[in-house]
Image (cartoon, rainbow, N blue to C red; front, side, top):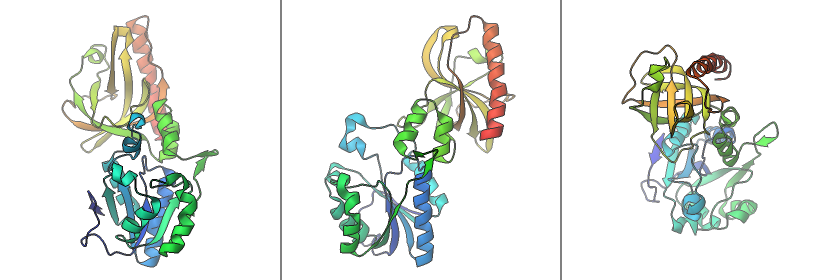
Length: 312
């Protein structure tokens, strides 16, 4: 896949014939993937390029910086999914106040038609963009006639009558409902980070943990709790118990991300890893004794084995 960073229309990147889609694609959830699949399929049928035009940041961070949402996917993660979906080229446009003031019609004229030679536009049922984004989706058929491109509006993808939307999935993750988030994402919610030196408490009680520092602070951290999940490092992937939050049994209030890998004896200190969340097992709580904490951790590990084997 060709990637055009800091995209500005120029002779080097214009003059194509494309099937295109446009959006932020935060999460690249099952609804987004349906759009990508349609773009790739139509491009193969017509012999044109399958193209995504996306942004370097979430538009809300410019339009309403006071309510900027935490992200489900980084730009790098999105690009990886686009490539795996079969997209030929991705154009990354820096979202600025000037772009925010551009109307949908102006945007189509300058970027999608004027540069990318869009002959087929694929969009979701609620897709709006440009300064007039609230009314743009109703005007898309009018723009299609004016600029002579074909338009395909896809219907929403639902699970048990709930529509796949980034805002809904974001809320699931924030509340720790990672199993629901995974259904709509089409994969386990995950993020990368680096293993840093910890307090050594887990090792002292027989359950050594690796402390993780999140790599991209814009990504959502699930709610405090104990989770079944996995960890990837180098060429390995292992089941893992993920603990997010304080350690009240030891009177420690600092919120950490700690990972316990059953039956693992290696050293991950200093390594870059990715952790994925399968199921939220329980709340963080203070135990009356060390023995009860150890018993609970053993129970957590048994649940981990069940959930990872059945739902990953």
